[in-house]
Image (cartoon, rainbow, N blue to C red; front, side, top):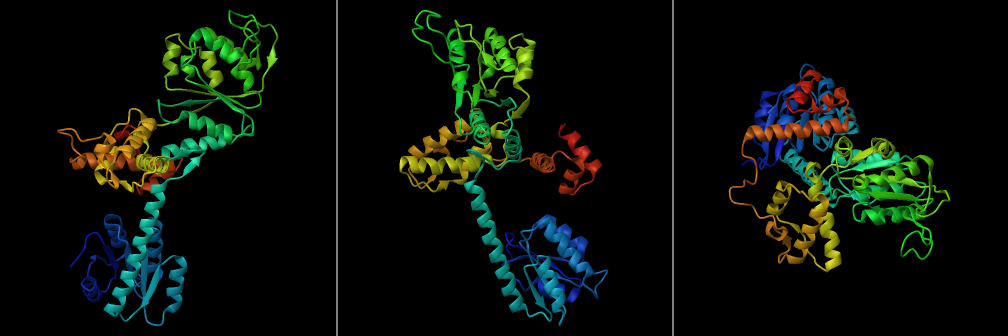
Length: 451
């Protein structure tokens, strides 16, 4: 009996032992390789949890050089794999050397099938436990900076920028669609800065009528206009010593853009109806979901102001493009709403996870949070289903792409994207990570439209 979900790779050059070992492991899908090249090919293809490796491999069957090189390559490509090395009788020194290199265990010839089967079974059990532990750790998710929870390479890269930029006073522009978490990024920039003990003042430029926004930002003097009964500080003054977050800066009225530009250049303000110049020490963070370049072309946003607010620009990707983050965020939101609502929902049905991965999330993280809260309230069972999320599959909609070419291309595209993120867009390093040549990677980049 074999189980394709438990692949076991046996690396042995002796045909007699190959035949014996192929049939002595019940419950495993045994793959046999006779040399290092075959072993690495099968390792990539079947991803075995356990490898049984004879150290005496050709072209050095009487020594251990090739076997140890194979061990090193296996652990480099699949560090989570449990490698059991098989050595000759009275060859304890090389067995210990293999363990020091990272092998899980060793076994000395002659082979006793029952004992070897027990060792392999134990190694597989440890491998399964470690996989489950890693899965649980990923499922919990953790905050990269501030309250930002993510595991995707795209978000990791954005958060690393936050860590580098936060200690400075550079004016920062956050770009991202509505609901991607721009305010969380702004708060992280403030909390990681030397100004963290001072206040962070936020103002949404799109939420305040244009005729009131100037006095909100700059304050006003008594008698400046009808109803101005006393001198009042604006948001900029209140943020003195701390951070001012201007959300939706793209909606700032054109007539106020000149006044904001002057403040950014001179670091002084004048209250509405006043003549006194008031110096203000504040760090500026701006955010918008709009395309500012297009607004500049249309004459709706000042180009000189754009350059002032975008000394550093951080782009926050939409949720749909954040590989793996949907499940991590869903779990984090569920934990939070379980505590807030007094529920004890254990997790998500497989169909619900599929539906979440398939959904386009036009409202991004905010929409995901809203749907998880809805589901936590409505769910009757111990797990959340797709119907609880309001993501029921529509007629004619397929759960998974059935075209093998599409699946392969999507997998290649994701692998390239992650390799580039991992290597900091270094083509040579990305090619090494992917196990391809530079020309091959260039061809793939052109094929999938990477720039």
